[in-house]
Image (cartoon, rainbow, N blue to C red; front, side):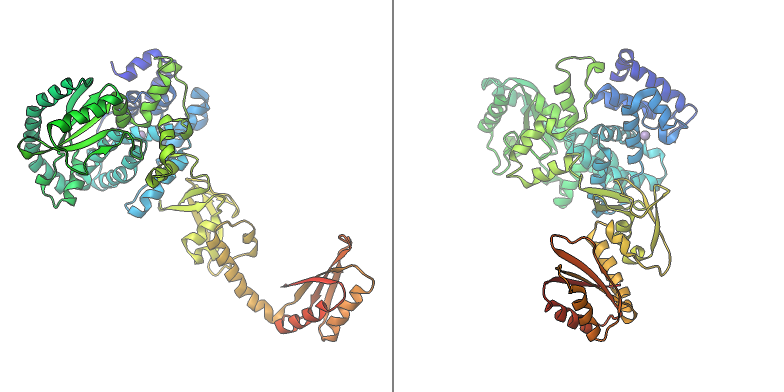
Length: 561
Ligand code: MN
């Protein structure tokens, strides 16, 4: 019985979702000819294999009903509650984010996905969904194959890696590889297979020697096996080594799983006493885990017949974490109290709740990479950024609070100036609308339209502010020819103040258009606003200098109106 079947018997929620998804997708077919429901099922099965909670698995069964069937979000919520609706909604939204092959976009898209997901389970479901889509990729049209494969290699495999799910990350990359590099893939198939076999035969010969040494040193071994290097990562390495297979000595590596951490170091010692290690190749990822949490000891030794052999040594717990990453943590924290799926507390992973992240945080000070990793893992890390999307699918990184006007100026200054309206996700919004991550923004422009001063009240990017001020200045230059100036004078309140001010101005042969005083005297001070019929800067400065000589004048400001 698969994990999912077990769960179906155990969980009412999963059983209902199974029936619901099956009938929602009834009659729909995948391009492979299979019923569509098989895809929903495969997605949920992957999630069950990763031992995620019942809510996530349920959402996995339902993950395509909003996108691909007539089911409305409200109906989904009525049947399965708001939590599952949110998860399915999240997966549906992520489906709209498309990667179109510019490497500079890749990091933004990964951030967008993390920022949009809010709940890390959304990413888990998306990864399970993508995994099955990759397994059935050959049924799609060539162009689409290539796009989805590179999206998988550039976006989803690195995301899985960051979450510590190394096995999934490697599998996704391997599934994508033949579609991205078909010729190189065939070359590898032709050239590597024999070497793999020869290599395994060689390691087989060494295995008893290793076993004996471990036993002599009282190492408690769980298992010893071989790990063949994946095609995709072998290819990357080959490119570095001029396609020379002879230089790849970790084509197949030993993997020793032991009981306790002490055993790891004892095993390392035992191996080094058999064969000398290669300098610089001993890696202690237990004392210093990799940024994604990976822990293990690695060493490469000069073995029988002077062949180089790599060993990886770790405990079972480290092994599970390395394979499953964040998902493995569910098992440790949740299944201690109960084995039943339904009793698992649905987890919203907060980075600070995870032990292995805490241990990372402890040394993030010394390791820049780790800090970067943590920054990108915390789902609230991007609180101060939002990621909006152009109608063509390009992701635009903007500060929190950005509006369609900021977006427009980011795209191009002319689009900013000529912006008259905006559609977000197909709906008209006001220009001061605050964008959120994942919003698809379309700017409506009108030829020769000019920016508006009122935009300065809501835009947040400096690009937009500078551009708006620039184009206002241009407008003001024109104003200077014909318009007026307003003087704002703050002075000690006294009898005769107004008379003195207007006297200075009229003696300079400038018309006063109007003059206002504030009714309230603020702590003995009076605000006087005078509008004059000039825009000649020289004249204005002269007046200001004269006014400043008057008794009790504290401050003078001016603006063109
Ligand atoms: Mn799907």
